Length: 77
Image 1 (cartoon, rainbow, N blue to C red):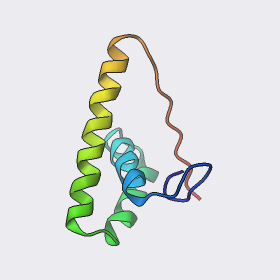
Image 2 (image 1 turned 30 degrees about the vertical axis):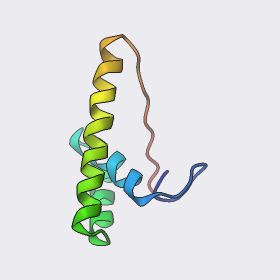
Image 3 (image 1 turned 180 degrees about the vertical axis):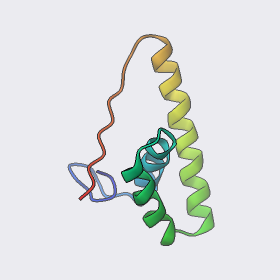
């Protein structure tokens, strides 16, 4: 969604962070999208995306611990 700007502002850094999370969970489409995004990113952008991904992961763990569920849908065209 972030990569393509579907109903949200287009943001490659945020798209990369979401792809990292989904790829870590075994999503093959997200792994491919992550790899494609990395081709056009500088090292400092990758580092920032990884930091954002870790932040989102820690937020998710906190929410899961109180019984909340976040559903993430990544659409690949």
